[in-house]
Length: 230
Length: 230
Image 1: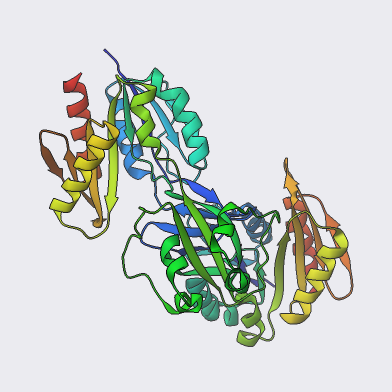
Image 2: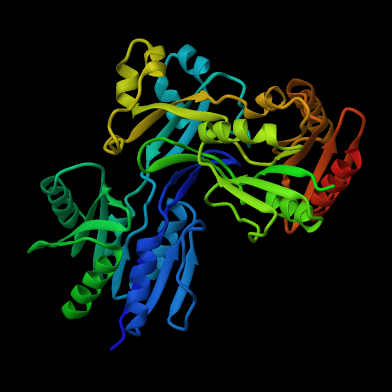
């Protein structure tokens, strides 16, 4: 029986002003391959993605939603999560969003730095006169932590991207995320191991850890795990 | 006789760490249309652009160069500017680049804020534990100011994007840029006037100001001005 898959891909951008933004660099390639793997087996895929991400060719069983920032991702997933059997959350989501940007001298001359945390830029394009600027940022809500509240029955696959760490560290961080977010699997990967057509990753569950070496193998492993589990 | 045009399009990204960057949002659409207009008339076009930007179809007279940040743009243009007759610099170039990012509490507890301006992040992915972060940024070199030093004979068209200002302000800012950068034309536009298929812009020279209302009209006007001038 066809399953309803919700897949996220690409990277969010948090706007600083009308022209500048902070972006999580992500090509969307892995999410695309995962989507295509499930589509090939006639499952229904809803892909939530971002403007710059590569997308699969539109087919009958594929629905696309484009989001920009964490806010729009949150609103979109809150609606979609209850309608799906599985969420594979491969999108690179911004962990900080701009609060206020001002020139360095203003910051130096201000008594309480805390005051900047409650300010907001009113100018539409922040001036670029001073030699140094300071940008204050605040943590974004962790979208993944809401998923099981929105749908306790969904199979949740989270992603963790670290840089230049050991497998032990990857597994520890993945297990922490499994428990904190009530996730079923965490795909843990290391940026230094994503290159030259390779993409090494550990699929971590409470019970086991499986290792694969390419995006296609990641997609195939997720497909097998998820459809066998069901 | 065919001219050698150098056109920039898209927007640069300055990296914060291995996964995050500050991006100037720009589709590259205008640069693409300008390039196509000159190609149609059998001129030679070198397009310096960025990953996310839309690109013209590759043809015999078109060469593409992809850059990422201000540094790579600078290096690329330094080589290319002396070999071209005209530079149309429509790329949205980052005016600030990250210096150092740290958590808010560290900033509050540090005596001299100036010390952050000479620090650099050694971690490859900056931690995302604290509720607030502070990013220190410094001004990037103004690439356009080097162009006439690299090639005094090049025809230089600069761009100025402001947000929600009067035409008088647009013209004043454009004239300042004409003189400061020894530019021949500045295409001044206002973000609030770029929507619904329209793109209002003022082409400002020392002598006159011409107003057009679409990307195609901008490209056509630049084509006429530049080829008539020559």
